[in-house]
Length: 381
Image 1 (cartoon, rainbow, N blue to C red):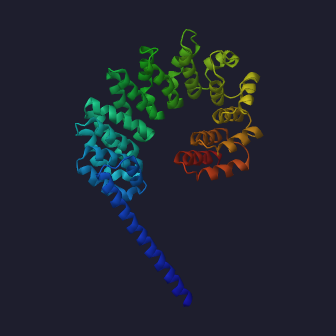
Image 2: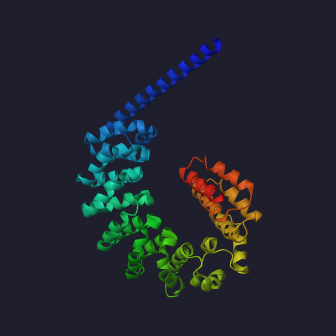
Image 3: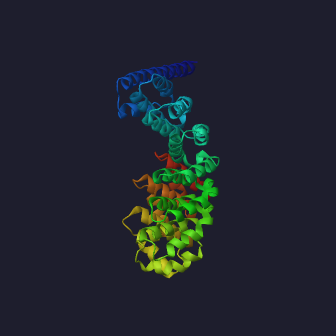
């Protein structure tokens, strides 16, 4: 009986503590909203975002009050909150479509992009029926959310890309399309056409790089990329971009195999770029293996991961491969940690220590690292 009273007492203390925290949270949000209304800066918006979904109703009220400068800060906070701010989508939609203030519309689009999937119907409607200048903002929002925008975005973005008159406008639609990943497969012919028509322009560079981001689904672009890569008359930087994308799309390409001896010799091909390409191709001959073995000792952590990735394609039991990939999961740069997890998923090293390292990475503070580690663990199983 005495124990029951003790347990009941502890539960009461915990409940009171939770209520107190809730009250403190509400008071903090109220104070921050007042500071925002009085002209608070980015720090106030970030502080509100830390309160997550609890801050959303108050931020929506701020948006309805009509002060443009304050609204932009409120939109910034909602975007930082992300998917948990989906209740704000209707009022953000009004900010994108009904205001005459371009800065406000751009901020609304950015917030919608960060909120993600709940914003897709709004953005698709703007692409289909909205004003051209608002469609550009919607495309930028779609680029932020990537594949979550779904395949329905692809034909609408293609339509706007074909109609784009300004170079910068075309680049916005190219980047939005390639962010869809495999969902942009139907856009590949249009992207290739743009690349051919706008040679030696920023648009062509975005196409060359973007096709690689689409991945194997862009295999239809292989002949175009091979042509750019092997043409000695093309500027070196364009040939390098073509090499990178072709290795991501079609690592067994005959053009890659035929050009590899020249690439390994050097010339215009920087070592880190070559190692990145070989990560997808693998050590196809002794010279390629030598390049990758040298890369494992590079001072650059990204180069080390790509080198281990390439060597691991041939021998997943290689101790150097296992060591580099495990160590890279602890690098300071989150992008390197993500890359290491992806490499592990592709190489699937045969070592129990890899699984343990991935489990730790799945609890990383960075969501992208968490997702990459979880995906790698599934592949290992």
